[in-house]
Image 1 (spheres, rainbow, N blue to C red):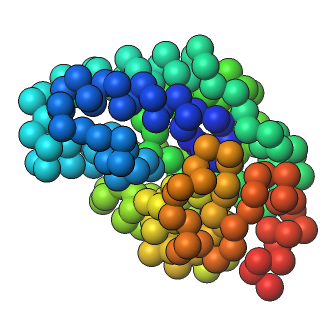
Image 2 (cartoon, rainbow, N blue to C red):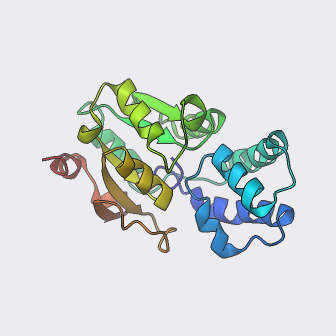
Length: 209
């Protein structure tokens, strides 16, 4: 969702950094790449275990929830080409969303941009048994619900952790350059696309032939 459907990553980079910096003084800009695409729970454990984050899980969840809802409600817009691609693919193959975002965040974004009609399945990391990205669990779970084989799936990802997750699941992965992630390592993806305008149903279908 973040960085693939909506331009929220640019806001996350700033707001999330500001929040963490106040809590973890030794947090640096270069550290930010470590948490892009991670679930909130995985992020918490990384910050707590490796950086000494002085908060309980409940306190951290409340703090990041406040930041997230501000970003999604007040700042984000759809990425150029998102609706067009969804309209082109809809009805031809099942479409699923596999995201590290919380369910409440998904609902805000989907209501704001009227995205629900385009998706057959939406899965939040909160709803799976297993680990969040970069582990493959969320993608395998989504494929199972959609009733498709992992090798028949094309994933669009904008982060290193997301690409790792998709490839670990055995899926074809498109690394998306969205204008905000030039420094992200997407080398693990099968192909790269400079924006969603480079993608359509015909091209996505060709990736599996």
